[in-house]
Length: 366
Ligand SMILES: *Cc1c(COP(=O)(O)O)cnc(C)c1O
Image (spheres, rainbow, N blue to C red):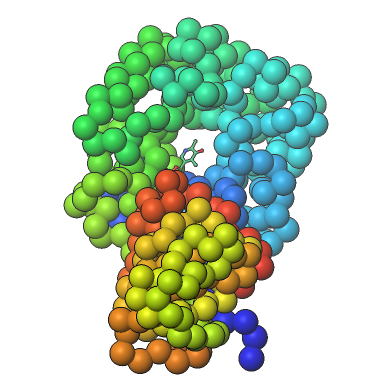
């Protein structure tokens, strides 16, 4: 018997979520975001599972892209932050990596590179996120410079990123889109040049159809969780891909007034039965989870009690009829949303999934 703590990754659910993206924007290309180990799900396996349908993938760095190449993934791979040094342009050209261009140094590195095969570039336009990309005016000059070098393949993709697309009541997304659209109508490309466009992340794909352009960039939604804190019709169709599971390894009765775990931060208000589960912050279960965070034991919601340890948590199972050592526990998955756990921990599901460590075996099901 090995340790029962595993992350089951349901590739059928992943493909269903991809199909939902497709159904929402049938004409668009879909570039799955697989950065940070595919949000913790396993980058190589996720790309393999989508390789028949996805025309490209998106990662944060050239190191992530090279891992995919070494695993035999053939599609173009977009480096979302572009290059970090000029020597990466040549590697990108050799490996069919697409480069986001976010600043002048990255633009110059591409123009000055001695490469035999042109690279595809995505021009980052800052429409209000104010983190990366060119202000619209600079973006025009950069576009012209990039379109005039043989080092760049056509078409150039003009891209922008939304700050608040998950906020259904905010006007920020439409404002950013208007800035982008105004900019692109002034661009006036050379005769025959086409510009492709890309704006939408998961939230925009689900809720802001007017932002749908040539390339859709879904991340979180592919993994089956909603980017919204409220109910949203399309998001309700998503199927969670990861199920983080473990098992009960110890049971004990404690008397009212006894406390549990490090710092003794929970004290029983009644005679209680405590189940110890072999999952902890060393497995990505957040230490900031407070008393009362729900844990599914034999399918029933039970409250976390006491501090999360590195390898274990403790749960109050007093109200369950029958619990035994070895019984199945679910920390998050289709039956208990990672978003709900994240809310208890003052974070977002993105973070909980992304920081899942390699200690937890990923078990893939088709
Ligand atoms: C990560 C990322 C996305 C995907 O965002 P989700 O909210 O996970 O869909 C899209 N575009 C860019 C530029 C990104 O960095």
